[in-house]
Length: 114
Length: 119
Image (cartoon, rainbow over all chains, first blue to last red):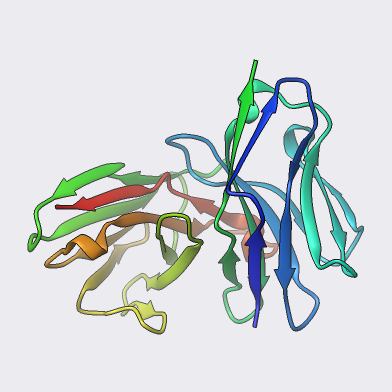
């Protein structure tokens, strides 16, 4: 069975410092993995996706994530946090079956301080 | 990009009443919409798939009579929580895939969610 674990419910960083949001997955076959971001009062927005091509995936707003099969991880990183990055981030695995069910992690709330 | 509008964003109701949540695709037609629920500090869980012009498909463990879904048009799906109880308090979010080629995941657009509090 597929599952996703986001290791931190809250992460707090200072503006200009690196961001690391951790995600581990469990899948019985090669998964498709995604990161979504949700800003207050906005819908979820796709940040980036991994679909068995390059293991280092670049997304929008300077975010990237690396798929590490040996560690079953798909951590999200950004070299330098910006105040506008403050939001809720969801790691998601896609279960292929008809309409591609999505399995969501519990989310990580990122706070960015001046 | 495509927009999915969800209304209301927040609702407080008394136990025993029913609450309707609307999900609209504003600039595209959606024959399918998805409804999710998120418990505090838990993942978003798929509740049901709403199908335009036909019955919704519910995930295992979701009460069909409790969570009524109607998808009467290509741009509107509604979720009605009937006879709400405090344990129904949760964050509900809808999503809809826009048309076009590519994986579903790349075409999926989400509403901003509804926080339901049942007193």
